[in-house]
Image (cartoon, rainbow, N blue to C red):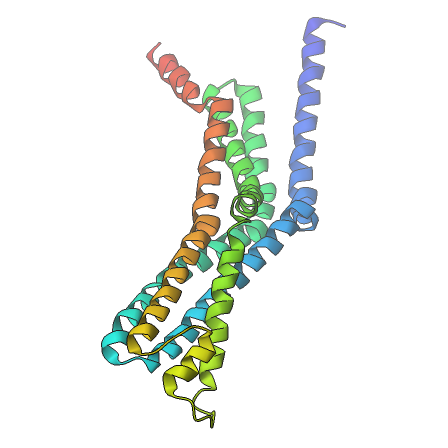
Length: 269
């Protein structure tokens, strides 16, 4: 067998392998991603995250009802603080929904279109030997890898890093919800106890006047702020950092900047 024939069969083998990978990615991998445990676990984690954020959002609404027991001069700044929290809930829910859509809809699309396009460009490079096609193929493939891995890696890191802080969030939510439920029954009670004595019983804390009630509410809101910071780190900051870290790692592995240098130097020649 001559060297030319060997090269020809090697090329045919590579072409057939890539065609197989295109068909497999388009027809099989894109349809089976939802059944893989790594993606199913990520969806479950995101559902739990959504429930947590909705729970703390509901607790702030309960707190806003309880604040109506305070005079306007005391209630206004607390109510404003609670209102300012709404934008953070929207941010977190938006991020969670985006990640969920990326897993459920985005990952199958990556296997169906993005990866096949990267392989087709690599095939074109094999026949034309144009370096920019290879560089573009590697960049598209790297982007596909990041899109596939970012949510599973992000949710796993969030669970690992923030696991010790989530009980604090749950405790804050339960504290606000229980207090709100207890306060709802104060107006219906027929006890001869004074108003602040009833409030003390409801919140299980010594409250003798408006100032004490204001300080108690302020403490609860401070807990909410800490809880929101924990949730933002878990559901917004860590996923973004994970995406950036994966891009950096793949950039170092594939050395995308070197492609640009070679293309420019080739053009100068």
